[in-house]
Length: 262
Ligand SMILES: [Zn+2]
Image (cartoon, rainbow, N blue to C red; front, side, top):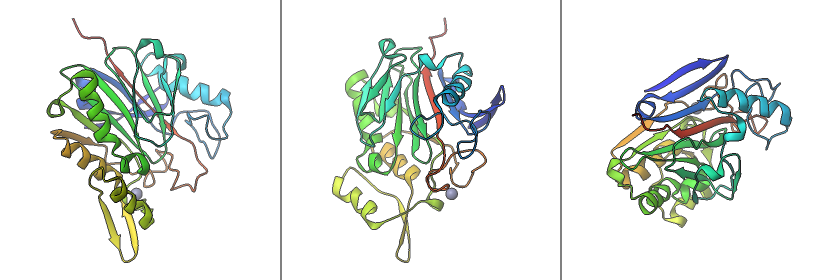
């Protein structure tokens, strides 16, 4: 279940099934921050023209939900590729460059990324206690980022796909994601797996959630959770790059393994 909650005025969501298994996480919204339009109000990205002071305050509000500060977060410099990086405690408060997926098997290491249409993908291995956070836009998805991160978890942690849980957070839905034929063709070029889209006359509508869900299914992951939210359909809750023609902020996602219960 994708559950909406509020903490000190900040609206956020959690996947109940992940939380119950010890994956502490926060899927932020745009509600409860300090930024003015078009970043209103909980923008957590420095890559847009918001001020560093406001972004820091917004990140602090989001992090507090998990009793963290912005200095605890492992951040990434996204490049819309498909590479995952293994991180641990030594990476807390640092920025990992040129990566679009982070993974860890250490409790208390919060993985952090920002979104405004790309799909946040959380991959959890309850047996080896490892988790990954993936930033899946069309380029990363065409390059098979969900499949490749699962494969990297197999190599790094000994994960078995049949044990994994994949959760697909809010992102641009098929209803709002018209793309050129070049984007659809990119999936054939990379040849990394299926592409789910709808063709209406000469127009193509890409379904990033279902495409990533099919990547998980191809790897034989039995459990795929979906938020059911299109960012462009819910401008009150989420930033949408497409829905707001590029003039918007980013909402944050934090994912962290809890210490094992005694
Ligand atoms: Zn939509």
